Length: 196
Image: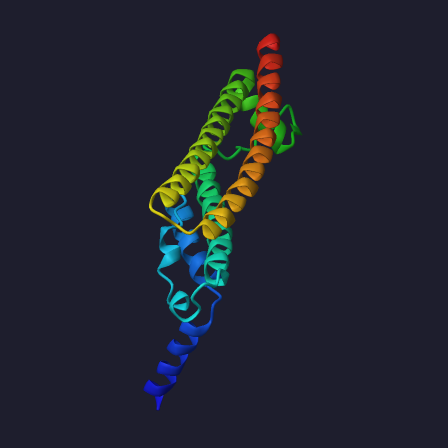
């Protein structure tokens, strides 16, 4: 009885043109691993056999891949940021019978030079993130060119190109936000260097 239920479930999966979950799993795995986006596995879809000429399996796969990739990529960057952050825990001290709040203690312990060093490390991290975004966009554009060279259908290519343009816009927004943050950090470093 169980074997028959599994067969019906498998057949139902094949007949269902929604490939979003498969795309999301593939995209998430690629994003977490830091691989370049690749829609090559999109064509490995059994629903394409049962729904010839339908774009639904490919579009839902691409939507799922894009969402999964961003989620995996964001989690990977978040973990990297946590690993790069090396600020030691503040040690509470008391001076002349008065206690200071922990933030002031940390600033005093590190001094201006330490603050500059921390800001410069963060600037390096933001620069690296910006470079990663540039690489991702370039590799996605290359992947689209490869799909076109290998003869992917015009309608699929058109849909994927639209997704690419949407992502390019999001990348640009994110890069602008990164640049604003970089500008603030650089300004703080300049101000601290004047005080030093």
